[in-house]
Length: 79
Image 1 (tube, rainbow, N blue to C red):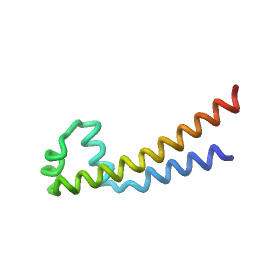
Image 2: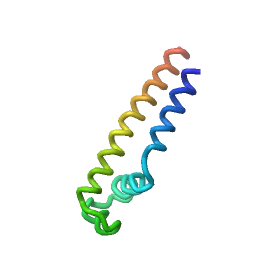
Image 3: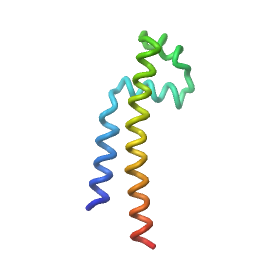
Image 4: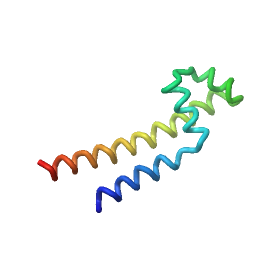
């Protein structure tokens, strides 16, 4: 039951990212675009791009912590 609660918590955190935030994260880390290029393509300031990236990184750190906890629980209970 704890496992499902943590998975749900991670999913909810992912859903907190706006579509713009997700897009900027993908453009930065998947498409390897520079902040300046993203700002120009989306017609927003570079600082706005940086703000979205900061929000995405903060949530991803929380999600990573949840997933690490899940893995630790899984390995502890299955050893």
